[in-house]
Image (tube, rainbow over all chains, first blue to last red; front, side, top):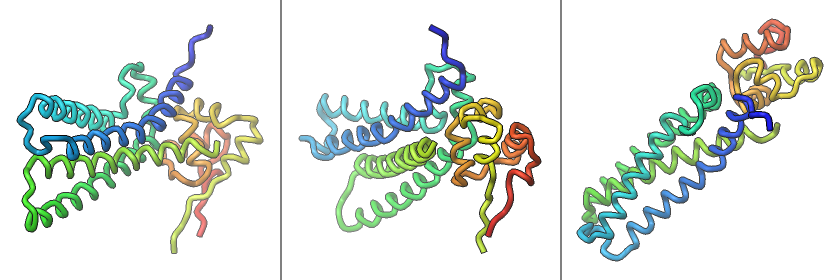
Length: 151
Length: 68
């Protein structure tokens, strides 16, 4: 079977990424729900809490790197460069812009909330990072999916 | 008054018998980018506008114009 061309591979990467981003966003949100609703929430002193927090830190870092670089690390450089063409970069920038606005809004909200309800640093960071990351992922994913349509 | 960048990419591409994917390959972008430019969703950079015009054998002004 003939090997797929660089443009075909880039197209595939682009489509996969558009499909995967909202799923990763929902997975990330679910992970947060389990953090806030699970037993021992906020204490972080049991082994299970350490595992949960480490998993959250790892997923947050991976998602941030994927957003910053466009992901697709298993693909060759030429494929990644093509898949990260100028419309993709513009969509990613829009994702970052929305993510930044929501991050600041969430930080302000948490600040106000902390005046009436005590909130730990860990909880505050979880809320702020989740809001910003989820927004950036969903916005980037939405724009990429819209761009794939109407071909 | 808001101005919009209109184009005749689809019309010209069809005349020359190119698919979106073929045009995308000629200008080193993905089909998705050609699709968004063609539908007026994404405003291309000057570099991409020149590449598209060359690939479609038109000048940039013939391919793109401002609409109110």
